[in-house]
Length: 422
Image 1 (cartoon, rainbow, N blue to C red):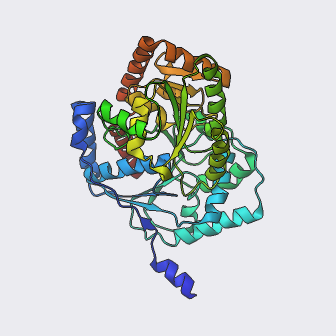
Image 2 (image 1 turned 45 degrees about the vertical axis):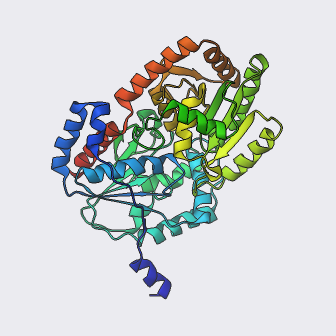
């Protein structure tokens, strides 16, 4: 055994530290019935050893979910770890291509890409130490891990957070054999399951937002306005925003085109594009730079990132101050920002795709759209019908409260763990 191999076998994947959370703090928000049901189920799962594995600890929806879900699982008495893959530019470049291909973008899969993926997964698998009852592997980046380890008695769950209803056949054909060895495959909705996937038991669990996280907790209106104004936004004029990764599937160029159409009739409108740069998304910089070039030509287009001081707390303020939130996705696994905005009482205009219609319907939270022109029309309507916009947003808030808050996701996942161990 080489020195490098020996070092790999004694090392472990990076453990992500999480803050303490108490399930009881959510009782006043979601009520006694849900919390009591979770507590009862948790008594049967106390001491269960659970491991989450994903690609990165920050910058994306999966990391955001785990930052809230893992502490609550710990509070329920489970022994939970959250570990992330070794940082690897070549792997993340390959798996970003996989991410796009699984959502329908046609791709050329090369032997070099396959080799990078397999070798990096094998390397990371050697850094798993076993001893878990259930391992939940998130998305395609670490999907091959169980191929390279043998942990007797461990149950493996693959959690897919993206829309894989029409994947590129080459990339899916490469990944499918890995997925088919799992005990369970979890998708947001049945429509996302590729037609030729057989083997795992299928489960369907939508994501949720954490109403007590820095991004979603209640903030005084005056404070939100002060913070947004510090970033150069004119609070006397209407504001539309999109909060999303700088990703072609989020269609930031389409958002800019819709803004320009709105501006023809409402020249006071401002646009803010707020995005996070994630370690596992090298393509994000290309998209970011392209829209910066466009924004440089219009003083009313503002671009902000987590690298320019706009973190979770600031996003919270922007979503509360905005007149309309956009989520003009072309493909979308769920789109947490929709529920985030609705939870804050802000109406949403969003792409009619993926998991977005689970969260809102026309007149309930906002409007679903299929084109740039329709997006602009609906934004203008909400801006010029403020009373109706407020009522629509209120109905969206109720839908999120009843279906898409973190305790509901916690209950669904605990049920998943229990059923997988049965």
